[in-house]
Image: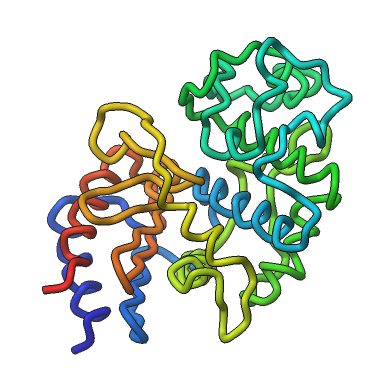
Length: 288
């Protein structure tokens, strides 16, 4: 039995014992893969794992020399009126949630204002203070849109098609821009392809899609995000932990968990059980 199969069987047992509402799991360990389904394979919202896709988009554009994560966001959205201190806010600050702009998440975030990016940038910054908000990723992708056009269309040939992902559906705001940090629908298998790309530091089937440095930055140069274990350090869309792992983590249990040469992909509908499952998986993924 391969490592992937062993880990899959352990995960299936854990899910049964803890009544976790899992939809699908895919394990890649070295060159070996294994998977299991509890529900039919359909596309579903990967929620904040989409923030990682936005980081990939920014990295691909940076590799092409048309975008700079360390450029002030005002260089791309200069027509927006800026709040105090926002002139110093870079795209990287937006993607690491350290703009210092006070704009917490809400269900009606995309519809409460005529233009969310303008509203976001018009508020004052408190410096490099962490606050997790989809508005931050959305604004970063508005900056990217200013130089590459529609972000979903931009990624179609550069990311999705090479991974064999076609007909991507990404929710849009009332102004027609991708929601960015949420609203991207993928199957478990499609999400697992993103996991393999990230594990392999930007290379897919021998072709480099994004720079290794960008992938490394998704789980390095951590910023302090809080005090709760698993949510105390954040990088470019990646959370540190549990334990030796790092992960992309979406609401309701959408997970890409990385330890060494192993990546586990989870889709689920169990927001409150996801942390415990992630902790179990991170421990089981460690080399024995």
